[in-house]
Amino acid sequence: MSNLLELDNLQTIFRTREGDVHAVRGVSFQVQPGEFVGIVGESGCGKSVTCKSIIQLLGSNGRIAGGSVRFRNDDLAQKSPKQMRAIRGNEIAMIFQDPMTALNPVLTIGRQMSEILVRNKGLSKRAAKAAAIAMLDRVGIADAARRYDQYPHEFSGGMRQRVMIAIALSCDPKLLIADEPTTALDVTIQAQILRLLKSLQQQTQTAILLITHDLGVVAQVCSRVVVMYGGLVMEEGRVEDIFYRPAHPYTRGLLASLPRPDQAHQRLSPIEGTPPGLLNPPPGCPFADRCPQRMPQCATQPAFYPVAEGHRAACWLWSGKEVQP
Image (tube, helix red, strand yellow):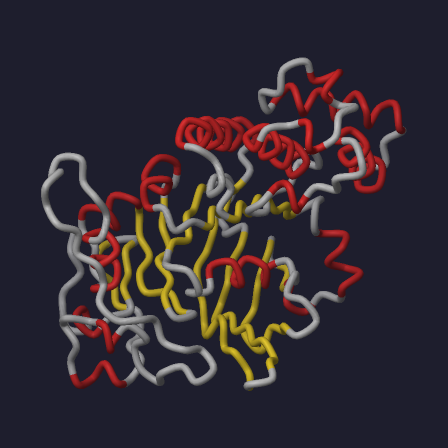
């Protein structure tokens, strides 16, 4: 199966008064059609910037400095802003972290949805209204016809996130980017939103790229995981590989820092130290200063080494080991 999305050595830089911030420093991974992929890592590791680079939502001081972003065999990094406006919403949609700031507070939910359908799909206003109400009903909003005429402040946090999902899926995109869609929600609503995303992904075969720092969320819905740190990919593999056979010391540190219900009285094991600054990123492995298994060669950046089929890690520990079956 050919890849829907393929990032190859993606590099993104932000210009600041202090100098250039190398937020993404050579990220490579693929997403297949209909796949649910999670990108995990602590704050500042480059998760959101990587995904915003895909659709060129970087702001005036950000730019793609190298690499390619191939979507359906077309390099988005070479597209003009006008060309990207035709792709955003239609081919690739994004759910932002805070729906209250993503929705326009002075326009009704229905108007915001209908405008997108009229502009992107060429529907009449009447047809757009009918399609919007149907989509609101599909994402689990009761009494959708009445809610269509309400404003964002009249919805709860969970309902606003359902509206954002409805807007994102209204134009039948091939790829949906979800940027921490459950962060501001309580545990019960989080579970509902995750079930909704998983159900819609299975129904529509839309590929989903989920950005999160919550490994529990990844375990529930994703089939494959990309672990990032310091603007780089540290490890990539299937969910079961990452959770049961983690290969990179950083991944092991993330998992060890999680509380476990079967070990209620065991102390957590935090990762000592702080992430590297990306104004002057280290030339070697960005995790080296915090790594309990640091070696002299960690001063130079390792290549990706295979751990098992579909499982790879950017760590010198695997440079001379045979691939596990």
